[in-house]
Every structure is written in C-alpha cells, then in structure tokens.
Amino acid sequence: MKSVLLSLALLSSGVHAGQEEYYIRERIPTPTDEVLELGSIALLPDKQIAVSDRRGDVWICTGAYDQDLTKVTWKKFASGLHEPFGMFWKDGWLYLTQRPEVTRIKDSDGDGTADTFETICDKWGINGDYHEYAFGSPPDKDGNIWVLLCLTGSFTSESPWRGWALRVTPKGEMIPTCSGVRSPGGIGFNADGDAFYCDNQGPWNGSSGLKWLKPGSFQGNPSGNNWHGDKFPAPPQPTDGSRILTERKKFPEFIPPAVILPHGKVGQSPSGIACDLSGGKFGPWQKQMLIGEQTHSQVQRVNLEKVNGLYQGAVFHFLEGFEAGIVPLRQAEDGTLFVGGTNRGWASRGSKPFTFERVRWTGKTPFEIHDMSARPDGFELTFTGPVDPATAGNPASYAMDTFTYIYQAKYGSPEVDQSTPTITSATVSPDKTKVRLKIDGLVQGNVHHLTAKGVKSAEGNSLWHPEGWYTLNEIPK
Image (tube, rainbow, N blue to C red; front, side, top):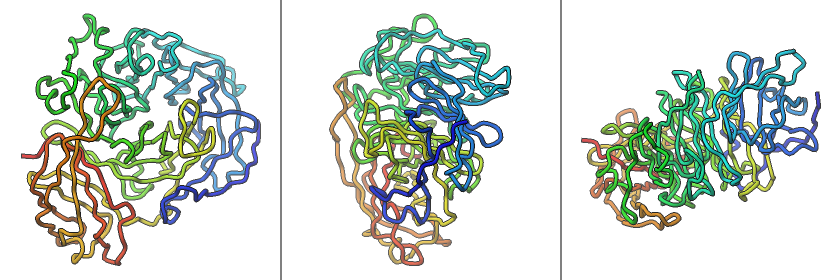
C-alpha cells in the first residue's frame, strides 16, 4: 500500500461567508505523483472507497471516513480502462461504465488487485472523438444500469446511439430508453427511484438543466434521432427558434427540463447527482437533489415536486470553494458527501488539476429557504427555521422576475420573454416556518427567479442564500 501524507486545510478562497459554520470541506490526500482526475466514486464494504480516474485506473482508498486524513492509504486496483464515468459495488464486483461498454471487475485470487474483467454490454458505437463520453448510473430498482451517451463532439451523432439514454439489464441486454440527450455530466435517481441527468448548455439547450429520464421520452436535442430504428418510436423533429413550452405541447413525449439551471447564474456545467437519503445526517435536506458543478466548482441544491404529471422545482446555491471542477458526487450512509474533480478539458474556479474532497455537516442548520412549491396563484416557501413575521410577512421583502430561453439549434440562448410579476401578499403560517406568496403574473414555462433579501429569521439572521430559481413547467390547478 502506498501511504500518502499531505497537509490538510480548509481553503477560504471563493467560499461563501459562513459556510464553515455549517459544512466542513476537507481535502482527502491522493497518491503521490499520481494524476487522479476523478470520474467515478463507489462506496465499498468496510468503509473503503473506490475511485476511477480519467486515465483508466481504479484505486481503493482506506481511511477516507476517518477524522485524521493524514493516515489515508491507497492501492491501485485496476488499470487499462477507458475513462470510466460511473461505478458501483455489488456482490463482490465493481461495475463500471466506460466509453465503449459496461464492465464488471473483481479480485478473484485475493491479492488486492482486479484479475477478472467481464463485459456486460457493448452494443453502442464509439469512435476516436474526444467527446463520446458514457455516463453510467448505479442499478435502479430492477437492477438496470442507465447509460448516457454524449453526442459526437457534443454536436452530432456519428456513432450508433450517441445522444441517447439506454438501460443495460442484469443479463446484458441494451434497451434504448430516451432520445434527445446532448452532453450529460452525470446521472442519478431521486428518492422515488426516477432517473435524472444533468445536460449542458449548447444546441437545443438554451441553458443547462436537470432532466427527468422518463422512459420513452424525448429530451430535446434531435441530433441522434436517426438511431431509433425499429426499437423505439421516431422521436419528434422540433421547430428551430421556438420555445420548449410550445414544442412540448405539440409533442407529448417531449419532457421539459425539471429544473433549468440558468447559465452563469447557477453555474455553467452541471455534473454529478446525489440524492440526500441520509435521514438528517447532512442537514435538513432529506430527499433533495445535490448537483455538482464543474465550471464554478460548486454543489447546488434542488427541491423537486410533481405537478400535472411533470417534475419541476427550484434550484438554490449551496456549497462552494472546491479545489477543481466537480464531476462525481457520492453520499455515504453517515451523510458524508464525497466529491471528485478534474479540470482537464475545461477550466474551473478551482485552481487544482484534480481533487478528492469530502464534506460533512457540523450539526448547525443554516437559515435557508428549504423548498419552494408552486401554487395556483403563487408559491409557498418553507424555511429551515421560524421566520420573523414582520419581515417575512412583508411583500416588500421579496422580488421576482421571470425569463426563458429560445429553443434553437444554435449554441445556447440569451434570456428572453422577461416579465416582472407582482407579489401582492405574503402570509406567514402559524408555526412561522412557511410563507404563502400570492403573485400576479405567473408565466407557464418560464424560470421564476425569487429573491428574499428582506426576510429575517426569528433570531434576526438573514438567509444564507436569499435567492432561488423555480422552473414553472405547470401551474397547479
């Protein structure tokens, strides 16, 4: 085993004031003279952790949960893989999704190094293009691995099934599941087991977003439509220069982004996904989604709800100051959030070329908007603690604006169709943890940007993050 001793420090550069009161971010030392540009993190028995790097190696880490991180040790478990983005442990095997296939590996002779490599499925295409990544999920409730195939060069589909989400069954069968994928950065499941992924701004994506992979759905980018064959209904051909709301009303299979992540305001390159299922060990965010962000080196927080059969919800800023661009996230049962990063190919606010970090809750709860839920005539806000009724009940403590994006083949989009709704009333609940906002001027299909800078807690504290962005796909009846 190769022991690694590195000095540990909480870096304050770029960190939101007060973050260390609530969440402790620590660097986990990585092997000396190795380049660990992390693409995957898997949790193993006995509190060991496996990580894969973009150069095709898999390493096993011991001590990543311990208080004293200077005693962390590493052992290389496998080499020669092709840029794995997605890995999990099951029944003594490590399952990996790499560019050309889903693979499983194990140590059969007990020497600590993988010696058995089995291909589970390799029924999609790949060429030498740098951008033909493949992102894989943990198993769903049926044991299937979901695989997201990036477009060729992020613009076209030059290899079979590029631009699609597939399911790989435990028997190795490939099931084409969703069309319209562009450039995914990560995939995961919500608390109900539904699959979601982060797609990045570009052609047919005015901004990045968190998208629901409803089986049979079209996700918005038609570049890979030609691969549907006889295994999948022909995906729609949307109208260039339209709006998502207009096109999805024409094509019922078009599932809009559950949460749009406004470009530049909420990061620029969303990546890994973790659903907080720690039961309060990471703060009060049970069942909320945590979204990695490569360019801004952040983790955002999302609350989701289903309205008229579609997912929608709000995104809030959450954690920042990570040392590289975040790609994989993985949360352990004790609430620890493990974060991996790489800057190769894309710059980030984090200055290091790669990173492996962990985040733990201090036990102190920040004063935040816990969730934002749509109502027929406005929104209901739930806070993490009691509010001051004088400020929270004053409509002047809030402001709202809305916008959307052009749905077009060009790269990205400016914000368009802006409006400024009027907040007519703010009613505080008897227990002082909720506020009902009545609003004139809700706009279906638009992002509703809320600021609540005037709201104070019962103790007189301001919100840690006073704004959120809600994607209003449907207005409740």
